[in-house]
Image (tube, rainbow over all chains, first blue to last red; front, side, top):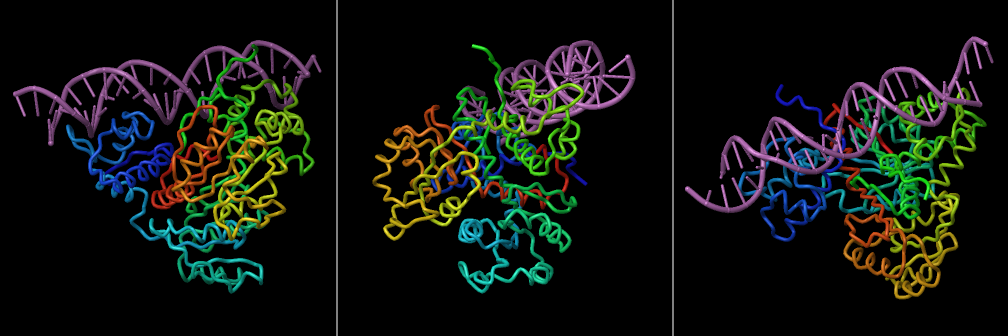
Length: 217
Length: 217
DNA sequence: TAGATTGTTAATCGATTAACAATC
DNA sequence: TAGATTGTTAATCGATTAACAATC
């Protein structure tokens, strides 16, 4: 069945950045770009850009470069942004509320359809039109709505149990904001945002000026 | 002048995770651990752990393993957590407020001393005892207080200019939460949290089950 | 002393960069 | 056609893993 290449996460993690730069080029009415010029803007090698893209197919044209709009759309498809993802937030505290207010996720097809919390004072509240429900009804909701992604913004004490439950109820991806590592069945994908790790890394960089910094995402 | 090794960012980005696991071991009254046992808990190779640690010196003892408390403290020192870092938040919106409420940063020596915003309705407010100031007084504040780190949680439109200003005023590190890449003088370290990148990566993983995932931080 | 486990060197593996023929 | 730039192979570089002698 066609392609049988294994694409490394290093490559995947660079795609959103390409996607962002290409989006900006579109905003600036730039319709065509060469790997060299893009490499200068992004501070990476042109070679890397061409290698990365060629993991997925030949999107460019010799002597011309890449069509910005087309490449943007293709990378979007690779990332799955052409599909709608139904999301919920578990934990309506500060961080949960902050993320609920992110408009930009919708634009990429990530649709927030529910927020859950244990706190009676938050239940019934509405954030950007989305209701905060009692966590007791989460099982029913996740199963009936076929929720794809859950953002875990709750206290770390309950994260493991909640993650296991969600996995059982058929969730496909967890976006985990707690300082806990989740080990789940492989049909559930996990993406961690360990904020404190980033802060510690920054502290190190401040201390030690002699870096090798390979790349940021 | 002693050590002259170049330590890669791949190694540095693993340190916070070691630090976290060692902290948990301390909480569980485990005072000693071998690289093999730690590797099983963390799902990495024992070899990698020993290699990583030996970049900074021999913290273990043959036939015994590592003293948990000692290793934890040493990694803390490497990361610079034994020093106090003065922090400010620029942008008192949802995300800024969420981060202002993170207690755990203080424990690692990151001390929030001010929050800044342009919105008159937020100025004067207090979050966890820390005042929200008018952004007009930020220059004076940063210079007088010798602020180390700024968390940038403001709208992306103003981020570049603010970052440049902060760099000029002597900031050492920027923790950037906006979908913008900052190119600054090398005496200013930048750590990005591109939330949307993480979400897009998660969408890809959901789509494509055949991963190579190298490692999370 | 015997057993365990590190520190460290060597081997492997993977990712990045360079180079260039293919081709628009 | 000549020039530009891709797609792709080959070379290099770096990171991970394996192996084992040193040593507690």
